[in-house]
Image (spheres, rainbow over the protein chains, first blue to last red):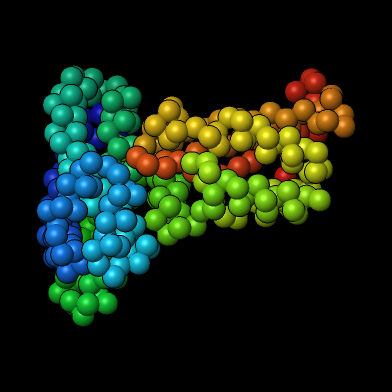
Length: 201
Length: 101
């Protein structure tokens, strides 16, 4: 695939991406209202970037568990990242213009970077959509769950298209790594050290 | 208390490699020295791409043998964590004499 085709494809996929984000953000707004007594305060704390403060204040203000508070922080943090990346995509779109002059050249580093960014944010967004879909099902909000399911499928198709064009980017690894964090599949260093030393005796 | 976290199945994977206790201790000491007490903000890695780093351990029982641990780090704004570890044993001529099965 030549660079100009990749540029056009990336633009189309970015537009789909943004539309999916709008729907998902609306669901997040509803979800936050359900779980938080004071969304404005929580929003400010999230903007300040301190997860510990956010989790502590949420637990103090509600009956949320640590896992729920951490998950909500992740969602709000991801939302701010998605906004940042959407803005980044706009800048990237402008920056891609010179690349079109080299339409007959092999894929450029700029396109590679844009595709990598798209794949990384897209896979994280799918993880987020799936979390929200589970929450919507739990709340018997079938319409929202169905909408999120449909957006997830669209986004997955877009990711597959980009992955086909940039097969050397290992987006599955990025996705897996992120899920490890969100799902708490990690231990701290002290625990790891203790387990390893004990087994190695 | 360190900032460093690791995937919870990595300890078992490393145990199954059957390395000596001396090598395991040397690996843990170097991992602790390089990464365990660093502030996440000071770890030179990309939020999207993470970071790869190596830890080289000379076998205390045979200095002609080295074990190269390949460490894959992932991160977000607040934390970083080891998402994968692999290892090769190489001799002084950089020939591979051991790798995990």
